[in-house]
Length: 237
Image (cartoon, rainbow, N blue to C red; front, side, top):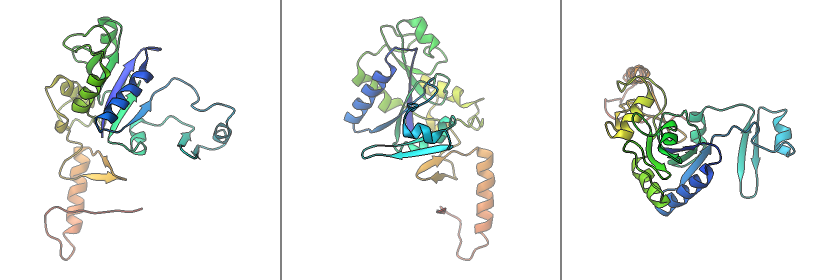
C-alpha cells in the first residue's frame, strides 16, 4: 500500500482537497481509499440506532443498500485500520503526528507550512498554498498534486525497528521525501520472509523475521520431499 497525508489547520479545506485529489487519482487509473483523523468525540449521531447499539456493544457493524460501516467503542491504531480499506492507495486527512508517509500541507504562508512539516527535515512533497518553503514547491493545481502523489507516495510500517539503520520510521520517511533514500530501504517488508494477511503485507521486525525464517526452514527440513528454494505456505483460519 502507498499513502499520502494531507494536513492543515482547522477549517482550511482538508476534506475538499482530499476529495479532489482522490478524484484526480481515479482519473489516472488509481483508485484510492481515504481515512480521516478527527477530534470529534463521536463518529455517529447520538440519536441513531447504531449509536444506541454502540452504547452496549464494543463494536457495531451496519450494512445498508449501498454502504457498510463498522463502529468501535475505542480508538483503533492507524495501522490496524489499513487492511479494512481495500485499496493500494490511501489518502489520509489529518494526523499531523504521523511519520510514516509523505504529505501535502495546506498553508497560507511559509511559516504555517513549516509548522505543518514542510521544509528542512520535513515530510512535505508540496505546499497547497501561495508560498513554497525551503525547496518544497507551492502547487495550486490539484491535477499536478495527484501526479506527485502517484509518483512519490509511500507508506512505511511504523515498527521503528531500526533495521534500516535509522532511529525510527520518521527518519527514513524524511530521507525518502528528500530523495536521499527510497522505500526499498525499509527492511521490515520485502525481505527473504514475507507474510500477507488477507492480501495485506505484514511488516516484520528483521530480528523476528530471521527467527521465524530459521524456525520454519528447520521444521520443513524434517519433511520428506522438502528442498531449499522459494517456499509458499498458505494458512487459513
